[in-house]
Amino acid sequence: MTHCLEGKHLAFAYEPGQDILTDVDIAVRGGEVVGIVGPNGAGKSTLLRVLCGLLRTHSGQVRLDDKVLASFSSIQRARVIAFLPQTVNPVFSLTVFEVICLGRYPHVGALGGLGRHDLEVAERCLREANAEELRDRDFMTLSGGERQRVLLASILAQEPSLLLLDEPTSALDIHHQTEFFALLRRLCRKGYGIGVVTHDLNLAARFCDRLILLSIQRRLLAQGTPIDVLTEDLLSQAYSARIRVGVHPLTNTPLVTADAPEEEP
Ligand SMILES: Nc1ncnc2c1ncn2[C@@H]1O[C@H](COP(=O)(O)OP(=O)(O)OP(=O)(O)O)[C@@H](O)[C@H]1O
Ligand SMILES: [Mg+2]
Image (cartoon, rainbow, N blue to C red; front, side, top):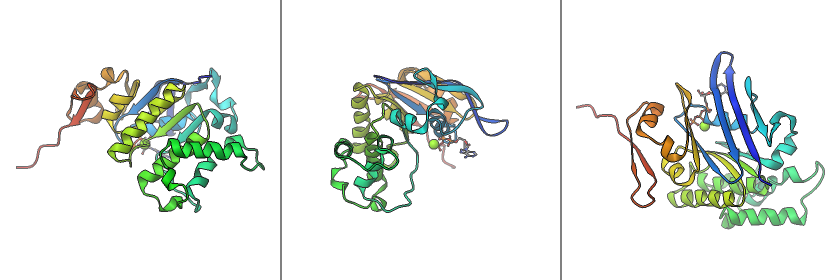
C-alpha cells in the first residue's frame, strides 16, 4: 500500500508572532521524490520536523493517509515515516551494524530482542546503502560521508514507506551523491514516497519529480516541476543573488549556478 503525507495551510513559529512557515501546502506521496530547496534559514528543516510530527503547527494540519498525524502513536508513525535529521551526534559507541539495527525499533516490542528476520533486514539495508565494508567499524570513527550512508541504511531498516531526509548527501562525494539519488529513484519505483531537503539544485533538477522552494521573505515561494521552479527569476528572488539557469548538456535538466559578487577593484 502506498501512503500519503499531506500538510495544508501549515504555519509554524518558534517564537510567538515570528512565523517560520506561513500557509505552506505540501504533499509527499508514494511513488514520488519531492525536493525541498531554498536558502539557509528558510525553514526547510523546520518543515520536515513539522511533517514527521516532531513540531506542532499553530495552524494548518498534517495528515497521514487522511488521518490527523497527531492521532498516531510515535511507534505507529515510525512504521510508516522515517526521518533523517540534518545532523546526528552519537552519544554511545556502537558498531555500524548496531546503528543499522536501531532502525528496527518500531518492529520489536519494548522488551523484545532482534529476531532472525530483523538481522536479515539490517544486512539487506547495509548492502542497499553500499556500506558493507563499514559493517564492523565503530560509528563514531566514520567520516561524514560514511556516516550518512550508514544512517540511510538505518532508516531503511525501519522499513518505512515515507522517507523525510534532511540534506542526506551534504557530506557525500560526487559519485556517492549521484548513487544516493539514484537509490532514492529506485525506492520511489518500489512505492516509497520521499521528501528530501537539498542545497544541490542540480541534483534536485535531475532526480526530483517536484520541488518546493522556500525563501526567507516569502516563505513558500513556488512549487511544481523542476523546470517550473528552477527559473532565474524565482531563484534570484529566493537567494537574493544573481542566479543563472542553463540546460545541462548531458542530462538535459536545468543547470543552476550563482554569480560571484564583483571583486573590489
Ligand atoms: N529551535 C529553534 N528555536 C528558535 N529558532 C529556530 C530553532 N530552530 C531553527 N530556528 C530558526 O528558524 C529558521 C529556520 O530554520 P531551519 O533550520 O528550518 O532552516 P533551514 O532552511 O533548514 O536552513 P539550513 O539550510 O541552514 O539548514 C532560522 O532562522 C533558524 O534560526
Ligand atoms: Mg536545515
